[in-house]
Image 1 (cartoon, rainbow, N blue to C red):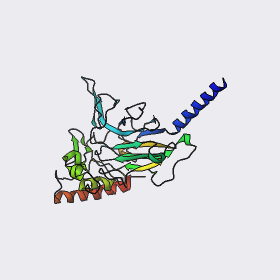
Image 2: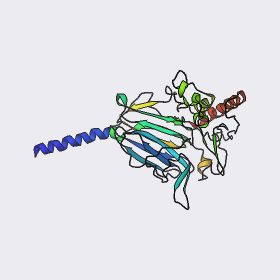
Image 3: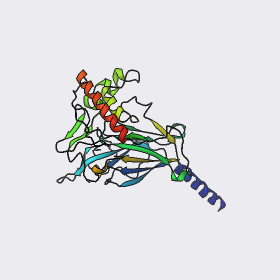
Image 4: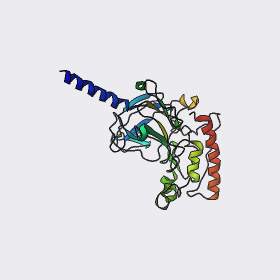
Length: 317
């Protein structure tokens, strides 16, 4: 009996140790419209309790991740079930499952992605927000001390909030912009996704950090969102780490959206309205060629200046 009690105590200790390495994701919707988060586990990672759900404006939901989990989170927009077939689909970030649950499907490009590896090398969680696959809505990841850690956590400068709080769809270069017939600009593609060139995809002869350099297109994203990945080798300024087992994470869609947008209770994209900066001025629409000519580069520089102003006023990290 004593041996049995010892085994139970030992098993309980293992559970506690294992649990200390897990994390909780609190997914919050600050947008003035419904967002459908999608969640995808990497190969070999334990499953999450959900792979997709709806979040109304102002709602949040906690999702527990198992120890050692890695994968990605994103937001889907303009979603609905087909009246005839019942198949669920989204205008951006669709995971192809035909259901609110993504069931192992990843995000269709373009989509803003939050990527995580929990309890990785050196006892650290690794995370980032990536625009490498394009952008569809603002998203920020904020680490917090885990309630089960006794208030621990890392004081490292790399354990910090990251993301892209700027609204970029209206200012997206014409060659990258995704427009829906009735909804206006709904997403912004990456240059790799839009053009498929090796120089933008960091592939082939450009498949190394020394050969693949930032382009005018990736600099458009980087100026607006300096902590987010803007192209494949953007590691130095875009990867963040926190102490594993003592950190939880809040993923917020549309942090700091102006009250005037929130109060409408509708998707500003669906309403076909240009987005606004916090100072009330309207973000500009501008043209751009499929390939970066000098004129297109000039347009991109104008866009970088505009979106940098948005980032300064909107990104609270």
